[in-house]
Length: 92
Image 1 (cartoon, rainbow, N blue to C red):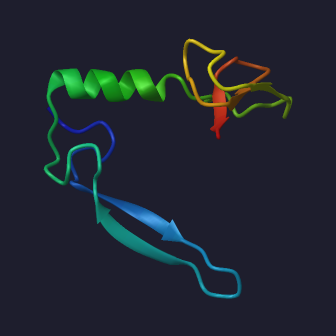
Image 2 (image 1 turned 90 degrees about the vertical axis):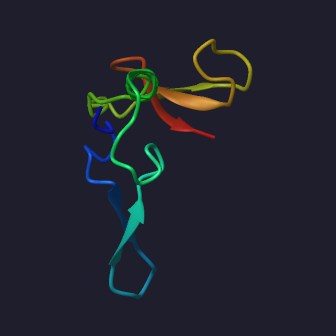
């Protein structure tokens, strides 16, 4: 099945920004499908499950809560969660 990250294109465009320099874009092989454009159903399901942990509401309140290491059953690394939807906005 098509890779859920690159949508089957096999590559991703990564923006590179350096202070004082013009932004640049680098095309890299997709790390999820290793540049094949295809994944198994299990791999796609795993990727989608991981993506569903992340905030997609836009955090309208701009408020977050800090969660220390090894406290959450969702993520062992310290992270911040959105006050609006309760999903992860930043790890580490």
